[in-house]
Image (cartoon, rainbow, N blue to C red):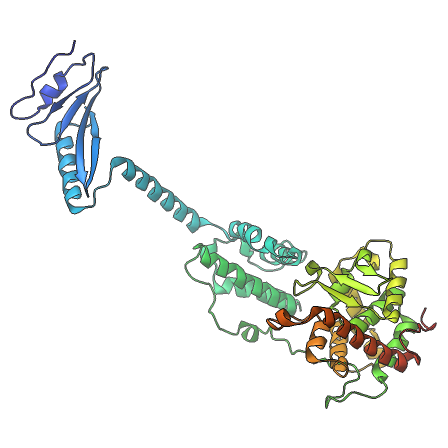
Length: 446
């Protein structure tokens, strides 16, 4: 049976609290010297100072001020007065919420400490996962990061490996050392690509609050000051003069076809011709699979993932181009139309560029036009095809994005217009080079 206990008239004392005994039920004793303070005794004898706080219209009952004797009477009274003052000022926070806030502050402090010591490599791993690997073709970017920023390249000779530095301690001097080491071995393009990647990486780090400021100055022309500027070699469409006029008889293309037929293997020969006749990008050709080519319908379907604009397109093929594809398909042992040893599209493009502009390339040996690349074949088609079609049709032949114009463009008539324009271009080239229309495939070069 519970025994009623009368609290001291002048308030609780340490001796009184110490002598309180457990009963069969929990009970509370008011502290008459401090309004709102109570001592609660549990059936097992645990003594806890408790109170009820009213703050901002809310009631918070049975808030613990601490257990006795770890919390003495004077400490409990002092804490209660502090809570009452906070409640009056509207800034009172319950112990539970305060505990959560303290834990959050501790996490933030720990995160800040980790950020202070975070290395470039730790940030690079996250950058690769969240940014680079989300790209359609991340392989080349990942390879550049691994070879130049992590130094995992044969012959790496920079005195600083960027990935080993704390990300907040990277300076412009560190970056200069790396870029100069790449530049000085003659790889200017690689140096430019590396610096571009570094800028992307540190902009991302800034957005993640891993750094407080960029280690380089925005807007400064580092390419020029670091000796990375490259004078672009101006390419000119074949059989288009300096004045922009078309050369009659297509002498440069004729010369090119003769060299292709006499000196190049079937894959190189037919690939170059297809690029000239269709105006596609080299990547689109070298990623073309056999199932994409409909020889019966004279059509080539290019899926969105193979295009630069992420738009699917169907290319109409003349009889001549269809025959070129048929020869490539018959020779290729893989699913790709152009095999070239099973290499990827980039390697195939390099091989073709080497055939054209290499040390012993056909352009210099046979004086075919000025400087030009595989992309120039696409430019050549665009320069000549405008004679037979509208601007919109010419742009669609190259699968250029037409923006809002594409929404109102008649796609059904678009295919027929492109088919007619490409057929006329094919006929014109075949007449100049082989003396026949493109629906009569010549025996020469087979």
